[in-house]
Image (tube, rainbow, N blue to C red; front, side, top):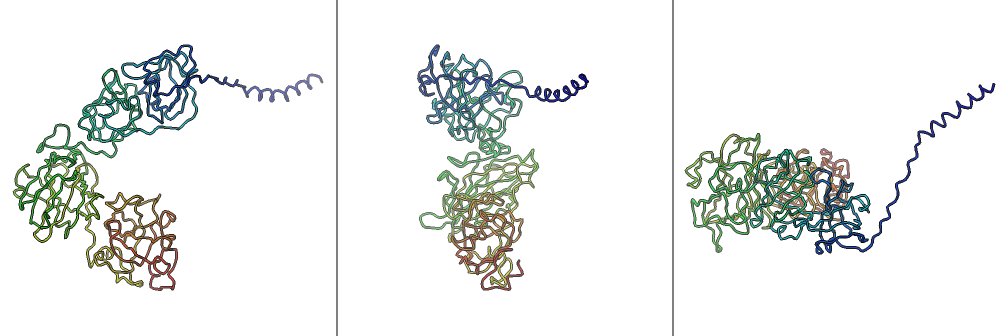
Length: 576
């Protein structure tokens, strides 16, 4: 009987014991209570240069700007003062757990301060017992600067961003068994000359190829003896995604030399690898306001001209698609697409009279600007020329009765699906009569911009202009999808899938009116794709075809699934 009772007791107690045994109790780690002592700023340490903190209670505060995560640094971190920008290297005896953006206090007792080959450094310590993490995710933004400015020492050890730079070599970031020291050049800073990007062969991007184009990168500005170096934190901060190409096709390229894509010419100071040729007239292309400028209007007089701006030959090879992108402003033309032509030749001899070669005019859709500050962008497909060597030219013509002016900021030939544009509708295009029962479609509304009638127009809501713009220069200035950040307008088109602004009308939504509150996409994103009929004046808006000056009342518009006009307008029902 005793045995049976004992066995029963054990059967009841054992699960409880087992459950208790699985819940192992771990002792809490001791809380480090490191005295603060004398507080130094990073700037004061840098100016001090060297110091032995043996036996001294002292601290310095900073934000971690570089850590060991990517493998490009080992037992090393950098911290920076958010207020002053002063920075210093932490050289540790062991790896640390600090991460970029950590706000930390470094306890300086027994730490050594020195200038290690020109770089301020705190060394001879471990993270454990010396580094206290105060907060996470407090990153410092990099300072946009140039190579020459870094070499003044202003940003030594600091986080910097260089824009429009390129690597001169076609290698990987590092060599298999040692550091890679790759030469970087600054596109906008001729005085800066070369800069080394130093990458460890243990970095997780060491075997990645260097970008072959121009872009931006974020890095730590470091120094070893007299050699300036950049230390990349992460491959994601080598932002060569936009690919602003190397000007003139590469370092040392001369006009007339064969160029390879991507090939960009900025007309900031000169024509670079382009040349000009005057076929007719006394005016010529010139560099003015950091652009290539051409006009036949001088001293209040119009002059007849034919003037060409001509590229070096460029090989359209190694790609499936190619395009040309022109950044420009043009004004005061009768018809800009008749008086400014983008031309392509496969048999032009560089520097000769262009009229002796064969040229094809590309189907560009240039637009006049509304001012001289907001540049427009035109993209034209060159895919039909893949596998060939071509020459690009901009041909300008004027008469003694009318002469427009064009300024070209840059011309780029690169890989991509350039749009072969459809010319915007002209007067008489489209359908409708402009009444509430028979509104114009968008094509008709575009063709009537110069007449500025007050009329009804209908189409599908396809987007809205991005905030912060005074004019629309191209498709990239439109939010075609949510999120939307401007409530003052919507963009309508005849086709709900349209994403080409030259085929659209921008509708102004007057403040405080039902047209704005019920139609705008910022507050009503579900209106995207809905049909809208609206009454107003057909005239330019944001430099594009527009509809403005609507009364904005519920009698002035009909929104699919929304309001109906007051009084009712039966004729509009066919659109809902």
